[in-house]
Image (cartoon, rainbow, N blue to C red; front, side):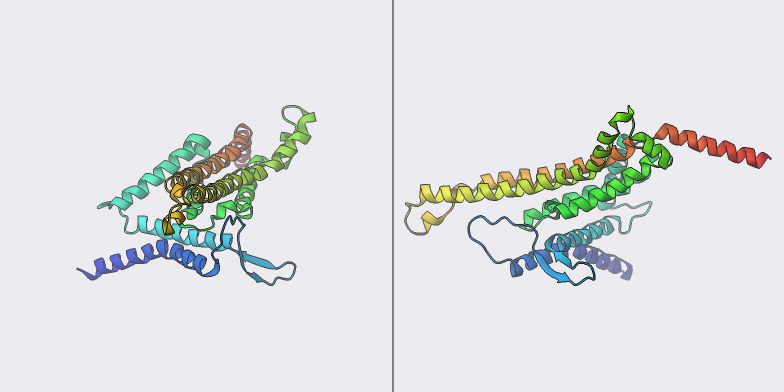
Length: 301
C-alpha cells in the first residue's frame, strides 16, 4: 500500500468520523443529562446553559446543539461522497453524489425555471438538513425540526429571499404588487405576505411535533393496556409489554421516517414556489432590455 493510498484512507476515516461521532456524542449526552422518567413525558428542548448577554441572556438549548451536530454530520457526508472525485476512475460514492446533484438540479429547474438554476445547492441544503434533523428521533434524540425557533429561522431566511426577488424591479413596483389584482385587496395581500413565513414554520414544526406526541401516547397506552390484559401472568411475564411489539415500530416508520422526509420535501417545494412565483420575470426582462438599450445609446454617443 502506497503512502498516497494510506493518506486517502485516513482522510476517508476522518470524514466517516465527522458523520458518526456527532450523533454518538448526542446519544451519550442524552443518556448523561436526561434522567429516565416513568409514564408520559413530553417536553420541549432542554436548556443546557445560558450565556449572559447585554440585552437578553442567550439560552443554549437541545435544539441548537442537535442542529450543530446535524450540520457537522452532513458536512462529513458531503466531504466523504466527493473525496477523490475526478473526471475518471469514479467510485460508487462519486456516482451517488452525482445522482444527488442531478436530482436537486432537476428539481429546481423543473419548479423554478432556468433563471433560478443556481438555487440547487440551497434547496439541496434545505432538504438534507430538514430530513436529517427529523431522523434524529430514530435514535431517541430531540429533533430540531420539532422546535418552532429552528424552523422559524429557516422560514425567515426564505421570506427574505421571497421579498428580495419580489422587489428586484424596485421598491415602487414591489408596493404596487400589493394592489393586484385590485387595489382594495391590498390589506389582504399584506396579511398574506406576513403570514407566509409563519405558515411555513408552523406547518413543518407542527407536523413533526405532532408525530412525536402521537407516538409517545400510543406507546404509553399500549403499555398500560398490555399490563391490564397480561398482568395475571406470573412473575416477570406479567411485566412484559406484549402489545408494544410491532405497532410502535410501524408508527415510527411513518412519523419518524416518512412524515419527516415528506415535511422536508414540502418545505423545499414551498420555498421554490414562493420565490419563483413572486419573481416578476416579464418586468425584470423589460428592465434589463431598457438598461441595455440605454447603455448602447450612451456608448454610441
